[in-house]
Length: 85
Image (tube, rainbow, N blue to C red; front, side):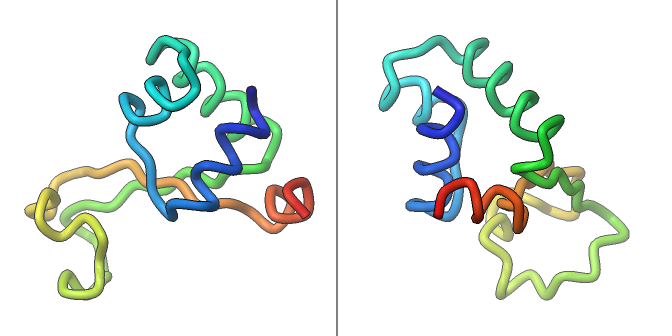
């Protein structure tokens, strides 16, 4: 399950819990647990953006929803890319 979650994130470049749950036929709670496991294992890196965000909004995938509020984002670490490799 963890590798499947990571593969989908890598394939799509983004994710929502609902989308992952539907695609993998799992509950959103199971997806949350999987994401937390991947972060603990170092395969995903968690970041928070918000008022102090230095990103240029026009280049940000979350620009339509952000409004400079706290948005939790994840990116696949080098370790995660090797695991997928």
